[in-house]
Length: 98
Image 1: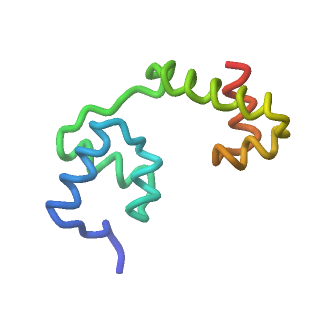
Image 2: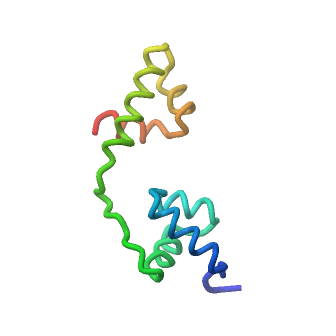
């Protein structure tokens, strides 16, 4: 079967409301088992304003930095911190040096 995966109106509404509430397109793609592009096109089709790539992440980054620092102060290695926070070491270093 080719073409877009059909979703119910309720699923689309949930996808849109989750995005508006702060969920990322990537997390929605993972949740619904479809691609980034498929999620984005469904959001656009439903007139949801897409946040820019450079949208402010200060609050999320501050929370991350606080957690990462606390774990490092406890003696965890970077690899252990990354596992605890569910992120790659590349993402860890990108955020630390941002």
